[in-house]
Length: 252
Image 1 (cartoon, rainbow, N blue to C red):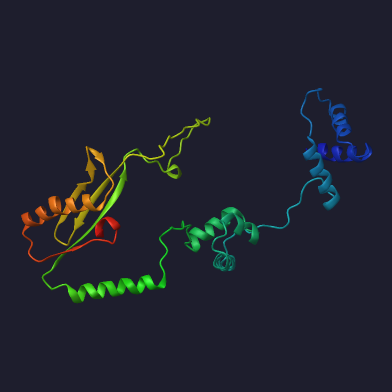
Image 2 (tube, helix red, strand yellow):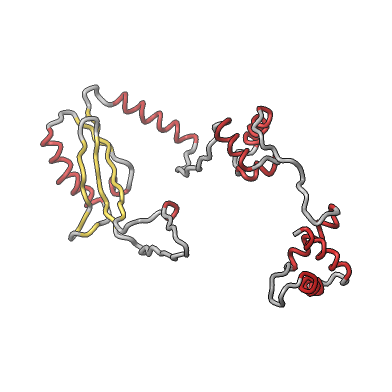
């Protein structure tokens, strides 16, 4: 292989920098058939550049990579991770001139660092934290000691078979181009639930004519009167307090 590279570089200069002439000379010198494999333009360019830079047709390594997880190497990796925790392990290895294998060994076996995904949550302002504390303090001061509080809410559940494509993989020799069709407005049900420290009252489905219905003030009041209140009467729980959020359907 080295002989072929040397010949290609020499032929390149002898033929006045002609890549086509280099390929023809390659066929003749090495007895390669007309349609046989010869170096492409990209390979010849690389060999010529290496020769001009290093005096050799073989690309030389920029330096010896670390292969031993010595304590000083571990500490160097630690400091690099602390400075740039979002940089990938591969890029960290390149920046520190460490082999990728050694980098992963240091991260997992010595530093016990593991990759974690960012979790997206609702943004909270500084005022929200104080409001939470105030609400809890108000409840503790207001509710009598023998009170049983029910906390309630409703949620939507899609019944069309929602698929998270990040968790679905299909292993095959060829791309099956598998598709999952999702309707623009998928079918769903709205379920209400109330829970306390001793009992759960659920589920209640908001429906109309056997189809899921939007929660409005009238349907919400009907649920309270015809479902929640009868359930409380059957349980005979004594002093009960009921909590609901400030949704328009709850307060209109």
